Length: 187
Image (cartoon, helix red, strand yellow):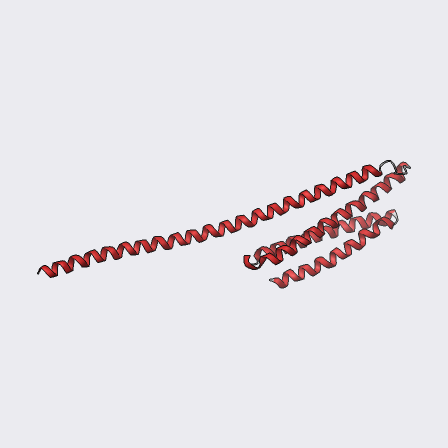
């Protein structure tokens, strides 16, 4: 199973490298190629998200005692994915501002602080989303552990009940044998 995970990791690394390269080229491309490049990067980001989901499913199938290392790797991949998405949003904002400026003939100096403020807010939202997602993952893992513990307790309860029943049967048999012995002694 870890070989599947490693294969997904390699695919993810290649894909993120391509995305990073394309994001860096977006601002320098002519308008026609920019549209095509933006669409291409969006498609690759979706593929990367799907790879992350497949990797996450693989990690969930790993036994709990060896899941920690893979979970840490998944967290770093998700952070990398978030960074890529933020970089892509910045390049798209720059691209859309260029298009707007070309259409309106605006030099863009007045909106520089607004753009910076918007990017800061976007980054804060993304960090909050990542924290919420991490909290959700912890809740899911805690629920799974709780479910396993309840199953174990249920099995233990059944064992204790069977042992108690055997003890009652043994006690009843001892009572019978005691009465038989007492009867034999009287004769």
